[in-house]
Length: 374
Ligand SMILES: Nc1ncnc2c1ncn2[C@@H]1O[C@H](COP(=O)(O)OP(=O)(O)O)[C@@H](O)[C@H]1O
Ligand SMILES: [Mg+2]
Image (cartoon, rainbow, N blue to C red; front, side, top):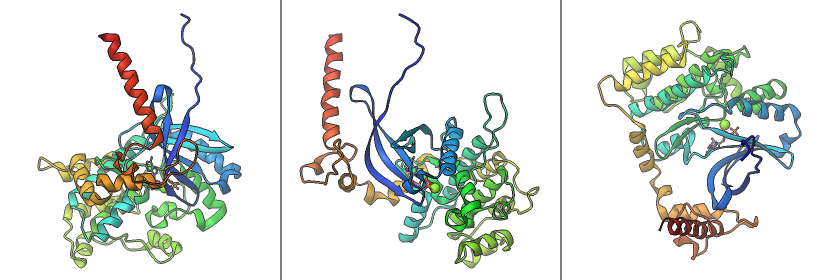
């Protein structure tokens, strides 16, 4: 047989449900179909129609997708593929079964629960871990790519039900930054999570992300974003000028006990003086991990997973999951299907028509394999 040189193959994706609808893009859960009934759940992000003709925006979307293509790390949502469909670009990526950190915080607030301090530190340590990897990513020649996320905020952090923490939305931040310069406020991202240099329209480097990670940590610990003001412009101003509180005192004012050591870590992450800030995500990671693990055992993915599954137990209950999973399901033919009594007995993970076909196919394949070895 001739040596294998290349494989040309088209993917087929069936949309399962809409996960998120934002100003610039829509994220779907989809099924990627392969040969012989192979099905893999993925997430697909498409550019909104109104941006579809904006050449510069698309170029950024595409350019950044290419940049993150090789970011392969447990704390970063992995990009699988960049495609084009009906002249619209889409990114296919790893599906995270879980929630973003904003939804997580909202649920905590609704349930009047607080996040255990060490889990807060654990979450940010995983963000730092993902950032450390991305910041030091090099090209094929070994040159550091100089990746800066520039949009570290709770909505761009995902927590899987298993407790994995993943940074997402890389590079769209840069596309956003690009548009921001031209279009102003509407796509400016979240000013209350920006670093002062970013808020001041200066050139940013990796240390900017560490400031943002510091804001996220202070929010997880105190339940508040210290820079958030009524208008985005006021938040931006506060990022540049508001006094960074001593978090031991700030916590006490809100009935929360913040250890001195955590205040030190926060002061360093939130230093406006770049030279006094953590210089690398690794440095910050070390101090965060030291804080949670220096006594021996500390939080893990499993601990966080248990906590989040308990917090969202209603959504995760099998019956309810089946119902909600079916409401926005789109069948093979593109018709949307509704939950019927007959459906509700099915498991949450499988869809109506497709799953049945696949199961039969799968079992017949198994039969064939079995009979071959008998
Ligand atoms: N890979 C994924 N798996 C599951 N949910 C995702 C995934 N990527 C994004 N999401 C959800 O969609 C939201 C928006 O995604 P994001 O990539 O941040 O888009 P945008 O550029 O519109 O902010 C996230 O906050 C998260 O809730
Ligand atoms: Mg986002």
